[in-house]
Image (tube, rainbow, N blue to C red; front, side, top):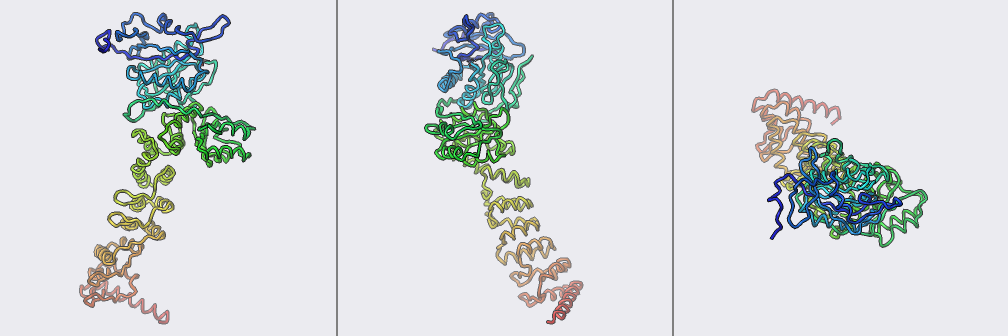
Amino acid sequence: MPPKLTCTCRQKKEARVHVIYTGGTIGMMRDDAGVLAPMPNELPKRLREYPTCHDCKYQPTYFEDEEPPLVVPPVEGAPYRVLYDIVEYTPLLDSSSMGMDDWRRIACDVGENYYRYDGFVILHGTDTLAYTASALAFMLENLGKPVVVTGAQIPIFETRTDGRDNFLGSLLVAGNYNIPEVLVFFGNKILRGCRTTKISSESFHAFDSPNQSPLGETGINIEINSRQIFRPCNLAEFSVHDRLEPNVSLLRFYPGITPQIVRGVVSEPMRGVVLQTFGAGNVPTQSEELLDELRSAVDRGVLIINITQCGNGMVAPIYETGKVLTEMGVVPGYDMTQEAALTKLAYVLAKDDWDICNKRKVMTLSIRGELTTNKVAKINDIDLVEGVARTLHLSTAKEREQMCRTFFPALVATAVLEGDVQKLSDLREYGADLTATNSDGRTALHLASYAGRLKICCTLLAHGCPVAARDRFNRTALHEAVDTDNHLIIQLLRQNGAELRDPPEVQAEVLRALAERQACKRLESFRLAGANLTLADRTGRTPLHYACQLGHIEVVEYLLPYYPSRYIKDELGMTPMDYAKAANKDYIVTLLRARDKADRSDRCLCGD
Ligand SMILES: NC(=O)C[C@H](N)C(=O)O
């Protein structure tokens, strides 16, 4: 029999928050010498006695078999009354003593209680709080509820404590806001967990997220910047990834660092290393020995990530001293904090079903909003690709490749139609195949020729897009350029070896129709594309025969220079002149005679 609720249902607007108390200053007490140490069983007991932390008059809804929950006193503007319970860890730890096993324990406890609560608060020491918050952000996959990590600089039992505000603020955020992220609430700021770093050992504003503005702030009101929230665009079920690779390390460069020190860090059994380099990602390049240590580690399969020592900004390949790392296969970590880079590396390396290429790739992508890459900033379409990869839960290289095969042609087509050469190059760099064909067998070059995009045609040809590719209607890019009378593109394609290659009888029919329709511009397009304007149809008649018979003066004038002989006879033995005379096209007869005269005098001048 399920346990009974003390109220028939949750009729009241209540939210349930599960608090996990791991240790840290927030719950510590001072001994006579003023030294702080954790005190087991004190925090939950005392909180019931603090009117600011527990409203003893409120009748909460809870199951008969559980302890009555604590209740946050009413807060103006908060939609829900927050009920909370606390589980206390044994032993309570100063966060300096915490490690991967503790992150795993917290993640699993969140996992086990996930569906019973609306949100979670983790009470934690401040010293390594940013590491735990970052690790949880990666380990809690497809998180759909807030998990707020907080602590204090002064214990909650003391008069000047910051712990009470941090604790209550965290409870309110966890119970009232739909923020599906691991957050850090500290000193009135709501920060993304995997962007956070500790910046002060004394200030109440002990945390900051250097490359990302806060997700919210508390003042008179709680203000949430909803645009900043990282919302997973999928409906996948929440899960805990509880494995982490322990053999990961941080290596901070400093002037004078020796190859031996580098070797000590990157050698067996190390599987991943985060380099904290100078400025925009630079290392000393004078020592080949030092670079060789890194190079051979990468070759052995050690996943090495490059982040900056600077509090602000990101690694970017703008200096020779930084480029050397990228060239040897060190992966840029952009603007990740050291906490995010290390914990992400431990998480990614423990994904046994991902191959090394995929692991390297994921390290450069934002999977929880932990980094900004200049690539993503440069081209929004790639956000789309990443978004779709996340939505579809694509994690293996093969799955991503399949998705890209579907997506890239559409993105390439957009870049082609917009004439955006930069976007096209970005897409290519990102893995798009510019020579690919769609289901109709058409290439990007077909489209660019049709759309009249000369520069795009040049780029595509330079990247090996086949000039002679025929679609399922047997048409080439040259046909597209002819059909749109784009003479510059026709010439470009011809210079690159394009040919019409249509059967002569087909070409002759087309040219006849053009002469009849007086389409001189199109005739010129065909000529530039390599067509022979004197081609005769099945009756032996050329375009000039038809133009003369119909009296199309402009067409006759256009065609004449391309006819070395105007006395071509059709199957009836008739020349163009015969047709002009028979149809009484006197002006054309005059034109043809004038042309004969001019030819004769040309021949005399040449001495023929
Ligand atoms: N303010 C604190 O919580 C510092 C403490 N040493 C800890 O990290 O557990």
